[in-house]
Amino acid sequence: MHTPFMNMTFCVRTFGCQMNKHDSERIAGMLEGLGGLMVDTVEEADILIYMTCCVREAADTRLYGQVASLKNIPVRSGSPLSKRIVAVGGCIGQRDGDELTKKLPHLDVVFGTHNLASLPHLLQAAIEEGGHQVEVLDASSSFPTELPTSREHSWAAWLPITIGCNNFCTYCIVPYVRGREKSRPIEDIVVEAERYVAAGVKEITLLGQNVNSYGRDLYGSPRFAQILKALDETGVERLRFATSHPKDLSDEVIAQFGSLRSLMPALHLPAQSGSDRILQLMNRRYTSAHYRQLVSKLRDACPDIALSTDIIVGFPGETEKDFMDTARLVDEIGYHQVFTFIYSKREGTPAASMEDNTPHEVIQKRFDRLVDIVQAHAFEKNQLDLGATIPVLVEGSSKRDELLIAGKSPKNQTVHAPVPAGKTPEQLAGSIVNVRINEAKTWYLAGDIVE
Ligand code: 5AD
Ligand code: SF4
Image (tube, rainbow, N blue to C red; front, side):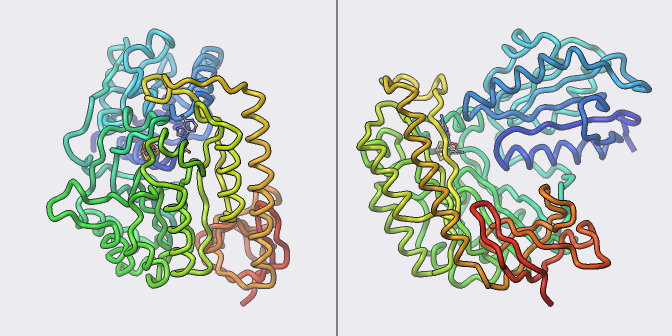
């Protein structure tokens, strides 16, 4: 076996979305296959890899801070390398390429979102030849062939079905750093899913920037609903997907929420705004009325469905009226969970050149008002499950208390319960237990495991 990373340790630090987390699992799988040993801390790592995100400015700033502070951390004793090798990949790698080595001169490797498979040879070149090793391609010509994966949990798997995005929402950098949308052939997806199910995976989460537009670039234009049906037939226990663009969510998929055995009753459907004027400026290509209609169809098909969303506050030119339209939408729909973001200007996107003169304090106040609405609904929604007995996929012990297990309900709520006598959370991890709910808070449910 070719093992260039024998006796070397590596650590992958991941920022951003599930796609990045999944790419990190592929990196771990590749390096482990080449003899490397994964470690948790920077101090122990001979090779340090950052998988970066540039969707908002905060993630950019964090990367620079972290990489700059590395200079003070010596290489571990016993390391076969005289100096730690530092690599940056993901969206910042793709966006900045060579420039990054000017800003951060002690970086060894920069790789883009299309160059995951090249990472081992870039690292090897950095170790053997030194200098800056940079590979940032504009696009991959087809869906990247399968790379090994080292999954974080043995019972859950992420499965990318599309990469890239064609939507060009005016605030968003993703289409520029992830390229045009490419779909993976249906047969490949099914084969990978079957392999996971055979290996004991209970939950599969399909990934794409907009899974709803799956297949438009493939021969015969297979539809996303066909993937859901085919994966249900693999016998997987729980099926989820992220993310959905409201303009492409079909009636066929909506109906599946009421009929497919394995499809969990939870949907993340980013609204971004409740103002039609702002939605148009964002190039979202739906109206708030269309969004409301989707929600009503979803609730008809699956009355218990838990909805979550993303909202951007402070898009350029957002007025008090626009914000109130958003607040009203969020209040009316009543989400289980809302990810709220303050607009962050991204150079190169159309919104970056739109007039933007709302003072930051005004935007911050709107944001805080929205968060109050969001939390009130999250609390209220969770109350509905008081007294219910819910199947919970156990993830391990709770961060709050080691004597509690933590897991996920079908609606994707976090559920806590005391560890039963004679068991450990680790033993239960990956199994589905029934929990009778006796406490409902804003961020979690709690109860007792019942037979
Ligand atoms: N500023 C703030 N939030 C953004 N998002 C994407 N781009 C920006 C930006 N420039 C948010 C959107 C998207 C989520 C992943 O990140 O709400 O759905
Ligand atoms: Fe960005 Fe819009 Fe594509 Fe989502 S759909 S990744 S928000 S451009």
